Image (cartoon, rainbow, N blue to C red; front, side):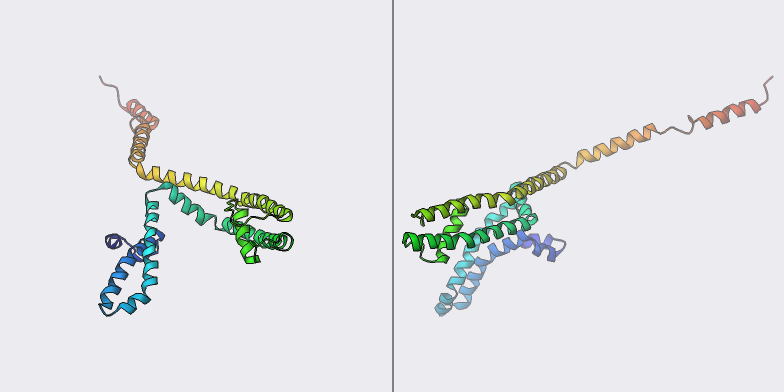
Length: 235
């Protein structure tokens, strides 16, 4: 990482790159824990206990090394470009889910708590979890409505979740396919620069060969004929 930073032309632009930020977050935990251990010494056990949770969280950031595969994967780069371009669509999808959750969670709590006398839906915030997994059609089965009104609410939430998630997904899919094709074209252009140069040189040669010379121009032929007429005949 230090060698790459030294070779970079702009250090600020290098440090602002998302993949380089991920590299920093993945590299730092080992050195931070090493420096804390050296600074604390044998008598700094209390300091290490206080910083233990922070160090464990920093060590967990080493999982971000997986994101470095995006440098060599066209699909992961296309995914990141799609997320950046479709921020509005993702916000719209989140808004749809939040509105539907706020509608179906109190309904299922009312149907099960008051009519079905079930203990699973103990509160409205607990019902939000059920609304999320039902609308996304995951369905863990940890909270299941048993009464008929609760099942009707569950069916409504599942169908509305499918429809609401289908609206912005089409736009996201088209953006992903367009981003993938653009990155693929850029990769092909970067991989084959020499054929383009060869084509330019052949085009220049053909244009040079197609231009007429001065000797073969019609003006030059007329001047030669006029010069021959003016010259006196030889005896």
